[in-house]
Length: 408
Image (tube, rainbow, N blue to C red; front, side):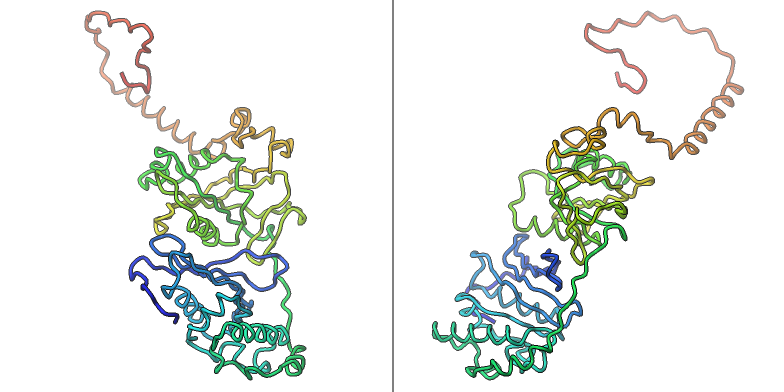
């Protein structure tokens, strides 16, 4: 591990492995390994993972300036080796800073580094010619800056490998990209909300009905405001991870903590392929207009309390929409249902029949109420003459008298 000048705190250091959104043309899976200290992002290791989990290509390793030279980069790299204990590791080529860091790092398992083994062992995962080129680049960096670079472990260090690399280049097996089909399964997208204190207190109050709280949250957000600049994932946890990753790299606003909300959509059967950018486990809608969707569930939690997650389903589903880029690019059906801010118009609210699915329940309740009133009328004693009382004082000007449901 690199020299630890100041040391890292024993408490508050966390490592988190999550998905990285990559180009649809990249067939390997994108991953982040994020290190946080005291709830703030301190470092990040970006890499690609082969679909079979047996090969890793490191793309970027970076540490926040406040945490450099404290051993954090080594902690993240060690964690990568531990997360994929049987995979080949390809570190690629190094910048000046990367070469200087590598000079002090000690790999936990050097024989899994493709730079340290002959191409015949790993050429099915990596192009042998590309690996030879990266090794030559790193050897030049070491020579230029006077670094050892752990050269003793590197396979045939300092020798020309063009012939051997070309010999094994044909063994490389290209991977076909896999893209999610939005019409085949539910999708989950996240939004990060700084709620007003009263709304925040209500939606996180576990003593209140979860569906009513979910309805209030959706009303506050706006049915026509489902996030456009977001990926819709195949799992709810991946959507929460997207929101958490963004929060780590931003300063939290003053007031109540951010609320991470995940909207679950029914499969989008009518979505045109040209309107979405599909990855292996997520999809992003890219067309400028709106997209009509059905929300089946809501899940939400405070950013700093992920273990307390609230969830509520809707039956029937709630009609909603992924917001258009601008009000001018909204469809006629969107404009008829939502205003320019993405909230339901009064006509849409009145036209909907919110209690249509509860007809039987409401009828049974009415019968119980009517039956109880009849029974009370049958058994009640005959009414007596009302007592003589002084007439009530008239209400003061501008004061409404108490009525049903109103307190005096």
